[in-house]
Length: 445
Image 1 (cartoon, rainbow, N blue to C red):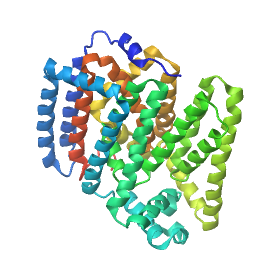
Image 2: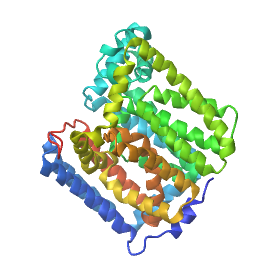
Image 3: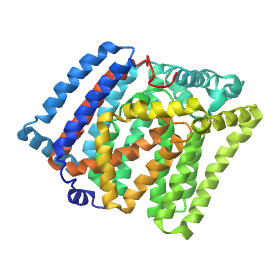
Image 4: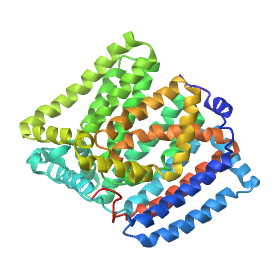
């Protein structure tokens, strides 16, 4: 299934648009983003915007004017990294853990979602799992709309280590690192080692990955189970094993018990099985894994019905699912998400690399490219017509990172410079977001 992405990418050059122009566009978009926040009055800490703009100008100018000597050194580092990929990956993992721990210690508390999850996890840690289900429907945040697995996971760790917010956030950071490693493995499986490492690096150039990855919420465990399900599905398609379908089903079931948006994984899996071209063999495997996942989820449905919360949660899910199509507020949320929340989550400076990656995928159209597009479209399309909250797009971010990696591969001698600028820009965005409170919306009131 793997393709030689490096060779193919060099053949796909966007004529008339040199690599350094892409870098200039990335720098310009970051400055426009900062100006937009200032003009709309969206930031409570508006005093941070001028230092951030100065930082962007200085780092952007420095990166753009990198001497050929320094660019050559970056390329040498890249060649060394590719020669020792596991050592490089170990270094990147340590960097993620270090930076993530520092950010987890300083980031503001996410009202309602993080507070509710930590409160439920504390009950598990101090009083046990059965106590969590006592008055489950009356627990804020949890009872009305969420299954119980994530607070149970957090709570079991807190019972061992101590009920501290930082400990809970470090649990999320471990899941985040797991998502990064799975992105690396997916890149290798679909393309090659270089694409896998670039995908890992670019995943952590997205601000929302750091923000949610260092907050004790459900999104990152969900993204881990989502990505692991897809990685095991690729393994099943490439080399079917009898033990794989029940394992894939169990992981998918764990995702459903984390958050109901895990349901988006099944259209992706279906599309991948169809694309594999071996339907007769895959129908049997797919049926078995779906059965395993459904059995796990059915257990929760029966328990939720016994607790008297299933009807309430089902009503909440159906209400959210129709928000955009049936409610004017939902369409306002869609506008808000598309125009500012989602670009800020992905990093507006990353948008040119995404467009470049899409161009590469359109021109090459390998089976691996189609797998990647199915992954993204199967999440983005239904969310845009149901509940377009920017956090719900997170399970597509590993695919977007690999898409960007495909685009970066075409930048030749500027690829290392582009990745460096993405990291620097992400650092600036995280400086703004560490105590972010939204003072104004563009459209939602």
